[in-house]
Amino acid sequence: MAPPPYEPTLESLRQHPVPDWYHDAKLGIFMHWSLSSVPAFAPREHDINELLRERYFEMQVYSPYSEWYENSLRFPESPVAKFHRETYGDKPYEEFRHDYERAIEAWDPEAFADAVAVSGAHYFVLVTKHHDGYCLWPSRIENPRRPGWNSKRDVVGELAAAVRRRGVRFGVYYSGGLDWRFDAHPQRTILDAMAAIPRGEYPAYAEAQVRELIERYEPSVLWNDIAWPTDEAALFRLFADYYAAVPEGVVNDRWITPSALIRALRFTPVRKLADWLLYRAVRKAKDQASLQPPPPPHYDARTPEYTTFDTARPEKWECVRGIDKSFGFNRLSRPEDHLGREELLTSFADITAKNGNLLLNVGPRGDAVIPDVQIERLRWLGVFLSRHGDAIRGTRPWRRAEGTTDSSIPVRFTCKGDRVYALLLQRPAPGPVRLDGLRARGEARAAWLGSDGPESVATPAEGGLVIDAPGDLDDSPVQAIALGGVDDAAR
Image (tube, rainbow, N blue to C red):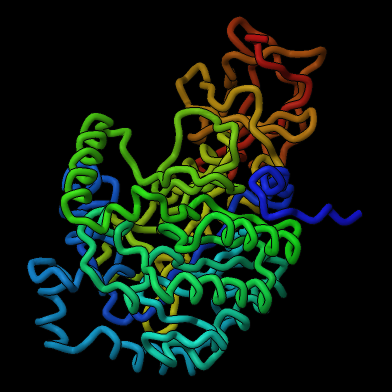
């Protein structure tokens, strides 16, 4: 039975359920590949949350995000500006399109789709237009400030078809809140960016382009960034029309429409005061401060950036991050700047246990090649999911997210039906392992997903259940145990 149509009202839109496929997927792959991947330069000394906490008023001057290259270039003192002067002289940013479009002509979408598929991800989100405004599809909506500011080749359509052939859902990212063709004011702080949401002819242009993306590609995810330039009435019509076209679609939480406060940020004294108040709040929060957009009236999933949580969240969320400190490819990134295997897999297990998905970004180079260091990490995920995927895919948070073993190995819990999964965030030594805080309901059974051995009995003991770790566990730093007949001892 088809779902009922949604009305363009908040009450109706909030009836839209987060679709099961999105709950089940757990892993998505993001892709930032824009003109900025040609110079591919950003400082690597700090991650974005460190800058937020420690250098708030210089965040974008020293941004580790190479896709913000054009904005960083506007600060003469920035590392990007120094690099650009020494490497390219006074070359305008727009001229990078020539090298980029030559790469697009020779680009193989199948290679990109293979990289996505090898990770075991169930959905993929492509950046179709980033803040520089360049579109990766031959849009029929002409940019009024820079005609022809788009690819002649349909990168969006070809990549959508390629990943779908591999059984992966396709989503689109669109930068609704920033477009530097319409507002090129340098953005030094978060509130500078909010003040730069274009007005005038831009809101109609952005809405028309997003509607075009929906019509052409029917994306399973509609991922907006920064903010949204129209009023709420127009936005709610857009959401209702999207859900009509894609009933199992997902919208993220960055659709913040221009409020009176946001409009007031265009006045420098107001923005300076608001920046100071935000800075004080960040300093007060200390290590807890991170990039988390404030929630708009309607969304399906929250999208904190380079951020995870201490507890399971009641609402669906998605950890959005790069493999290193940037989303776009950064030529400066060193091996130690990239996620290690243990950090990647333990973080993935932790996110899953707390009702989250991991949206992990890859950033191809300007020559349309995904670096080997990124492919390697996608393979790590694929290998892990091939053995331990039952403890991840299709699961839901259990009664508690965290636990420990008698040897202090951290544990994360998921469940699927009446089966509970314990994910040990360290490979245990062979022999008895006690999962603390669990009790048996009748005979408790256990099977190690990283072993070829048979299911065994979980033995009740003071403080929890004892399970023998076999000697043939695979080398994964995260080991999963499927448990039957167990419960939380606190119940």
